[in-house]
Image 1 (tube, helix red, strand yellow):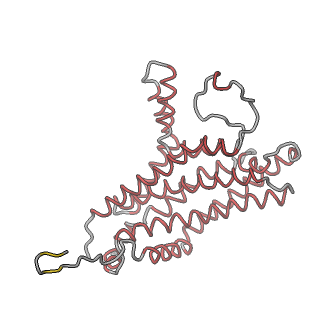
Image 2 (cartoon, rainbow, N blue to C red):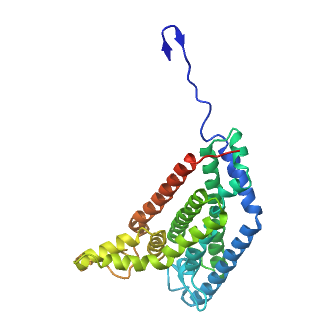
Image 3 (cartoon, rainbow, N blue to C red):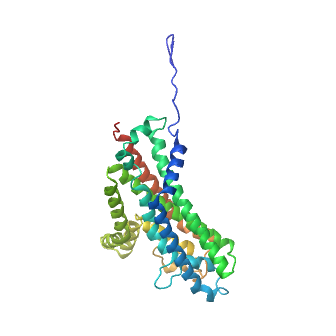
Length: 318
């Protein structure tokens, strides 16, 4: 920039994400070596294998009759064990909260945050690295479980999965990753807001209980406000879809049950020409759950943005 005879050069000192991968790799190593995380993931793996084995035993009799045998491995349950996806919807939030509830405030308590940020590592890179480390750890765990389901089903049933079954199960895996990302950002948000890890953990678990147990009750109360019956149904549906649990459950139903043709109220006139009970093409099922995918991604972005703003405004003292 020139002003008279004086030339002033403005240079950016570096990318705000300098040191991002250093933080990510270091945090992933800490996660993988943590006894707490190992015990939690061992519990997830044991519960998943038990659910898969019971489902495989139950569907052996219909191997030659059903073209979507692999998808049933995810959804079929046998008393007293729930289905594999039921286990995941319950355990994914717990795993994500365990990874994120002390991501930031533990650095405050150990008085290491000021030392880390004194290095050539920006706050942007530090926060993003923490998130990526937790997200990649969850992704690695879910991919291993997904491969375990396919491998065990192939080994026990002896029926190779079709391309559509692989595609539907893979899209379900992507939905599970975004679902985990929502709970990871919720845990990190409370880790930034509260300085005590116990407080942030309790707050995150409280939100999980709210969405898992009480949110549908609140949606039912909200749905009673409009006088028109269709308006009641739509208001209840849209309010319930604020919950990541609802979005994940709807994505699971549409992807793993090919006969699902709608995720909301449907009129009889909309079913004209449709053969009920027939499988919906894979592409149509993806279009059906695209709003749910968009909702999960939007929640991750909004929650991380709020966490970023609060973290940037906090004072950090040596």
